[in-house]
Length: 229
Image 1 (cartoon, rainbow, N blue to C red):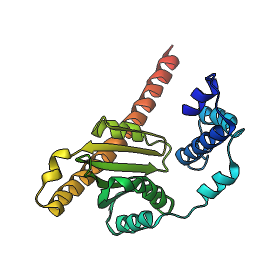
Image 2: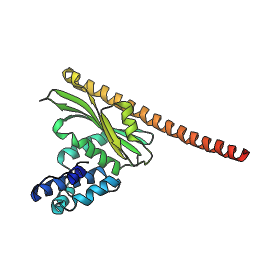
Image 3: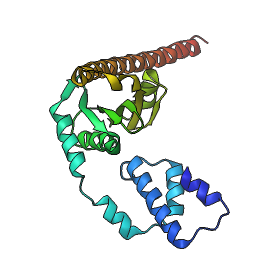
Image 4: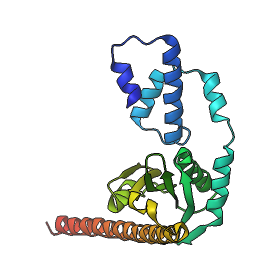
C-alpha cells in the first residue's frame, strides 16, 4: 500500500531517499510474501515500481544476514517448549523486552520451515517498562492454503489480523505488570493461550467440514431438481 501511494503521489523525492525507501519497501514485500512465493497482484504492481529504484546490493546484504543472537536464543527456547496438538504446534517463549518483539515472528517463520505441522504459533509476553505496558503477542504461520488465519484471529481478539500463511494478534495486559509472581502469571498465560488456540483449531476444522458437507448437499439437491424437471 505504501509503495503504491508513493507511486501515485506527485512529490519530489531525491534519488538517494527514493533508493532507501524502495529498498526498505521491497524487503518488506519479500518478508510478507515469504520470498515472493505468495504474491498478490498488488504486490507485483508495487514491485514493478520499486525495483526501478531499489539498491539491490543493499537488499542482498540484508536478506543474506544470519539470524541475530537474540533470535536464535528465542528460537531455541521456543523449540524447548513445544506443545503438539494434532497437526498444529504451539511454542511459548516467556517474557521478551519490547526491543526484541520482532524475534517472535522470525522464530515462527523458522519453525514452520523446519516443521511438518500444518500450523504453528509462537507467543510471548512483551514488556515495555518505560511505557508501563505489557501484552501477549502471538505469531501464527501455516502452510495450509485453505486455512483462514484472519478468521481464527478475529475470533480471539480484534487486535490483530492475518493473510494467507501468516498472521498475528495482541492482548493488552498492562494490569498484570504488578503481578507479584511472574512465573505464575506466565504459566496461566501459556496454558490459556494454548487452550484458546486448540479450540480455534478445532472450530475452524469443524466449520470447514460443515462447509464442504453443505456444498455437496446443495449440489446433490440442485442435481435432483434438474433431473426431476
